[in-house]
Image (cartoon, rainbow, N blue to C red; front, side):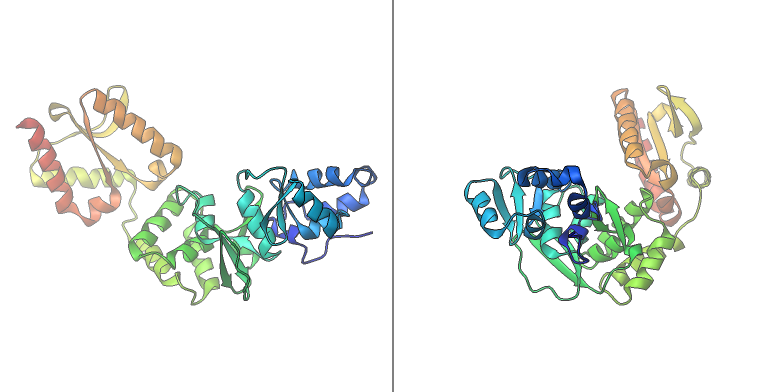
Amino acid sequence: MPQLKDRDPLLALARLDPALMHVIHASAPVRSLSPDQRIAWVVARQRDVISGDQLRQLGIGRGAIAHRRATGRLFRLHEGVFLVGGPALAPLAAEVAALLACGAASVLGDATAAWMWELRPAPPPAVHVVLPGVHRRRLSGVVVHTTSPLGGADIRIRSGLAVTAPARTLIDIAASSDQRAADRTVEAALARQLVSTTEIDAALRRAGSRRGVGRVRRALDQIAGGPAITRSEAERRLIALVRRARVPSPEANSRVCGFEVDLAWPAQRLIVEVDGYEFHGTRSAFERDRRRDADLLAQGWRVIRLTSRRIVDEPEAVISLLAGALAQRTS
């Protein structure tokens, strides 16, 4: 009875269902299905995409594949990879097709992985795939990045597909970005708790001298060496700065328009919020903060947001900003 081979392209689908073909061949109810019903059973698990190898395992020969293409039941996406049912692609179908076309060892990576981990707002124009060894085959709409074999720690399952882990993704996208962009992306990944500094450090060691390692290492060192202070400590430092600069003192942790705010100058209708990763680093917190700021603005208050890093590293600039904002309102 036929079973999956180690290099069957189905295994590229993030171990979506490693026993899929085995179940088809071993299950009497499934064996009783017609060829088209078997195809439908498989593509329901693969976003309407199927490979030629899988079709042949289902008993669909080359002639039958050609007939289905001629009658509009199969649409070629890549050599040996087809879309079933119509030309419109379902979400992530292009990514599934790229994995099937590149083979069982491939995983989604680089810019595509960054998008899937929500480190970039939109998918890249082409699907990016990471593949061990040399890949000479050109695929339309696919960018192949060759690398040494990836271990289990560098691969995760996301939306049912194999994708480079967040720490490895940071390294790969840093290879084609500048240091400032790498800093922002590493900070965003940490803020969203996609990855820890320990996981990034381990991924850097595994990556060796790969491009992007240096930029991520510098970003990590900067974060690790930065001001490790709490939000409340940052507020205390800011109040001390204000007092030394002899600008009007704020009210701390008061309520304004139903919101508890960090620092407020009621006479000047000015609020300062101290942002930290632990309270403001998630997507939901970002949305909540913007709604809150908009409500306060509608009621005549201005809101300035400061990070603990800026309070510690740029005290003169912070005081200049506050002094200007206070003078603007009172003039």
